Image (cartoon, rainbow, N blue to C red; front, side, top):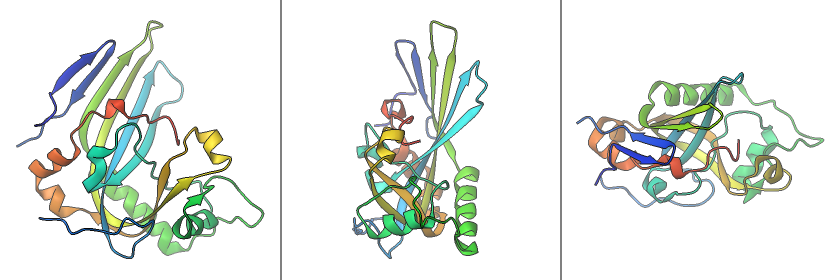
Length: 213
């Protein structure tokens, strides 16, 4: 069944937005497939008060048919801050140092890739649905609010394992995703709201989001 609308754990209050009232084909689980795949992008909107840092956004992603199995971590989804070499490396190898600059690193992505990234961000941000609100309070008076949103998309991504020095600065040693091409809203899941909520509703407060950037 669906998670309870509200539960309390110490000083943390977790509110899960209730729903408003096809059979999938098996897909390749290789790092990169020419076939389109279905994903759920999770956006964490993290705000601490009082704070001078404003609201932080963290993007995480999982294949639609596996998101309920992701417990401690959801893999990061990166839109920026990496060189063209990191993208090529991630799409062809099992691991990548995504944020480590090298002598031959460049950021000269072609216009089509830049436009695709902009379109993907727009699809995610404009079609996100709030699925949970997490409030925390601390003895020093600070308050933390994390609002969790979900967006179903279709597209092609590369995924590989973070390695090298990046694991030290990000405190993360798992896999991450990099957008590749052909992204759009997953209209089948988006239009079937009962199935959408059944797919995405879970307790995201148990997932660590401050690692992996």
